[in-house]
Image (cartoon, rainbow, N blue to C red):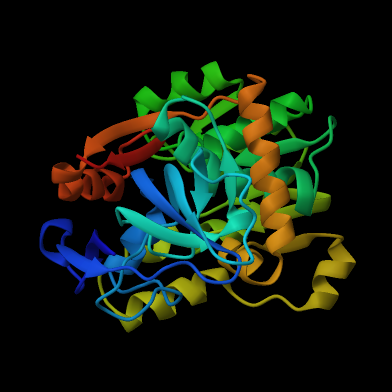
Length: 342
């Protein structure tokens, strides 16, 4: 059948890199399902792909995007039909910027008439947060937790999950107007890295104590700073490298990014009783699909029960695609951005 998608054709600005094209989408096979999408979500990895900095992205031209909200309209011969003709929130391994998306049956969860952008935030953002905070290394009530990019999609959910556990949360933001936002989510202390060195602000707040967990999607120069803040048994969870996206000098920026992080041998981690955990949800989806399924079902349940509230940063129509991508790239948005097909 014929469908339509935003193809990423080259690196560049959002206005020049995407091309809305028609294409033929095949019938689902095996345990696949076909979702007719009403909306799709934007993630910073998509910006990285557009800049040519995301090695996992398919070669150009390609359709990026990790999540959609829509209706299951067809099932493969081996797929579960439980969600057939139902509205679902669904993961996909790329291909999300399309009116029709093929994904695996386990990557869909039935939903009701909730806001589509909130539902989109449950996929990549909330599932990433839940995997890190509940599955990979659970937060405990006595933990002091640092959340980088705290006003973003993942960060805002991490704050809520940490507070559900009774942990103390230090939220790091880069804009004055985001400070009250993260406080309203439950953050106990807020640092603004644009006003002064964030690690010094945290040290002053802790008064000799240490943090137990750092959720860090920035990496680069923040890595060593966070390691110095971690106490015994501390965990640094790295789930991105946004500092690299700000590099303007190609290979030199990449080398400098690596230099800033330095090198650390396992024996040093053992002696200091510190831990580094890397998270790439694409790899989890590829190799641990049942884990992905569990996390998606769990966050939908938490959302339905009113225990977490995804933050909507902006809802755009499909003819505002370039505007939506540019807004996400600016780093000035708060919460999830999504595009609704019109």
